[in-house]
Length: 107
Image 1: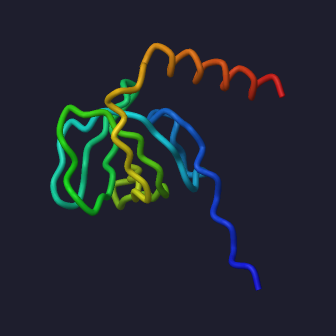
Image 2: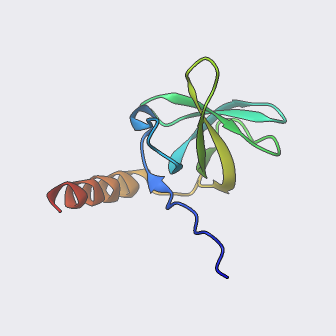
């Protein structure tokens, strides 16, 4: 018997996250963190991310996780994967992100 497949983690900007999103992939800078939560800023917004260990502040991370809505109606991401991305070429990343977005909108 096969186990159920996980939802694909869509690459998204924080300000675009909505209640229909199940799993997301964001890229942003950790502006503060505790043992349990990190505040990630991607330039379009800030979101709380539930983590299992504190992240270094002012470092860039890719977060892959499940979207959940808090009681105050704000979204939180429950991190499944956390990757340090400080060496990423951000200019190239932004170009690729926009190309991928345009190709999806034309399909």
